[in-house]
Image 1: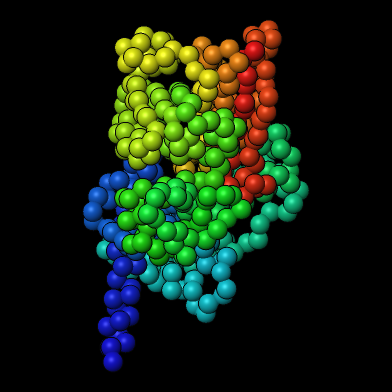
Image 2 (image 1 turned 180 degrees about the horizontal axis):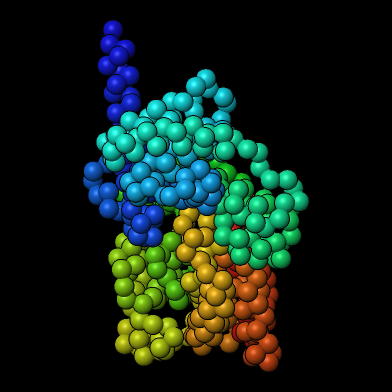
Length: 439
């Protein structure tokens, strides 16, 4: 029989390692305002498996709830402590929020507080541990308050659901109170992991992949990474949210067709186009840069029956000469332009986007998006189709861009079909996709 005390020690060790790593990363995030994905990359191989997953869960959770945590801690502490101590308080605060959403456990708040105190002794100092002990006790009470009333104003919603107030006001104006509240609640939940089953020859769909409402997409249960990894390496699955399918479904690539993906990196949609084609060719265009490596990797997984060409260049600078240089046509029957955007539809996955967005971005992005759409349109054959897509739910980046594009071309183009995924309604990431036809 195993030693119970030894088993308990082993069980708690990964939590402590992941916890202290998360507290350090949060301290650095608070101090330097780095992107969370880049921040997690600094872990290197210091954490792996369940420890790394736990650390990421804590970091994402803190960043999701940072606004509420900052507000509550600001009311409890007159002078903010060192970043190392603040990192501890934020992680403990997220654990208190998380515990409030689960079945009650005797003494859970006290356990979280005790653990935070012990971590502070190692990460900061014994003196600061006394501060943490006092603050976490009060923080547990403050964070136990219920959600705002249904008719709450923008400021109250913004603080409780940890979003910038200006963004909440924007959404209230676009979607109304009920939908905005659903969107805020949606953004605060961890995102499930979805895998697209590619149906490669010789592969068998594992029973543990959970079917979804979207054909070909499955939910990956927690704790299956050891089984997921070989499927990823073999190309049997591709980790992808179901929302990404909307643009490709509108484009409806036809067998033997040559399709241009005009903003291709990192290549998830290029791969989906290729899998849909089964025979034909995908031209993947994007600017040179760090994302090209990921695009190249994804294009290497394209079925052997589908041709691939990777073109590095700026669409806005004119892609015609680049296509000619590569021996490729300048005009296509099917073009996809998935433009850079605010990412307001994918905030479950990109948890720090809301803290990096500025009000002016909703003026800047549509200008760039309109320019990219116009540049992509130059490469569409008469009678051909062009899909404009975003991972935004904002009207300015979706309907307004397309409406202006069609109006400015005086009957040369028509909008045939469109779909905008509002995540609180569709149950997956938000996105906009618009099918345009060149007359």
